[in-house]
Image: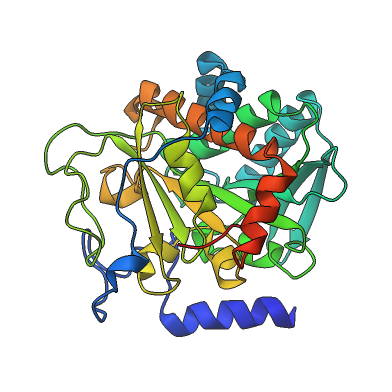
Length: 349
């Protein structure tokens, strides 16, 4: 408990409000800070995928778009009150068990996280974590926030249950909208001990094509796209292997990925989802997102419904997540050892 309180105190001291409240600043703005050294923020750049990654991505299973969208529709509806969240949990547990996973519940003060894991075939290999929050704010059906992401986690559960060298852990967090309570309750020295990296999904179903429809927190590179037709992948500096994997995944070309690697704490708007406790604990983690209120006008509103989503964008985003996970789960141990030799579990820029 002391470990979790320490992390929570750090965030409260920094003035973090979390996705559950209104952002601490208006769209496109963030608290002012000193200029960021150019090497700490990586703008999109062309990469040269290794042949191994090409073949692995091509071998990754293909998502079922109809099943994915049916999950979004099944979840759409307020998941704020205890009864509504309990009904959502029961549905999610049933779906995970139907996919062949054993589900455990982690109860904390006021909420319940759902956890499912399959071990890897290599006893010495670490595991990867895929997570998303399933709760909503009051009076919003939460189709994009965050049924889109939860549906992607379930799709990964269906497609990635076969044995791989690395194990896979799925975590569905409760009470993200009330100060990241579920992820703070989850992250501890014990739960992150063997986690090589965490991929946290936060709203992955909305796109906009007009120039200027995409905004950003102040201080991010001016070269970022003006159209909201990309999938954002934000990682914690100095780790880069997860963002690299999204850049290098060759099969799922659409939507394009824009990756950033930022110092923890420099941009408060980038600490508003369940990746933040992992970052604060020093775990390599990425937030995969359509950028939430910086793009989607339905954010935290009753209009966040399934018919407001861009279905091809949602399907492409989910396929990208599955492709990257498939690559990393099958990554040879010698490649991981090379990353360890560079000074961290994933290497550094």
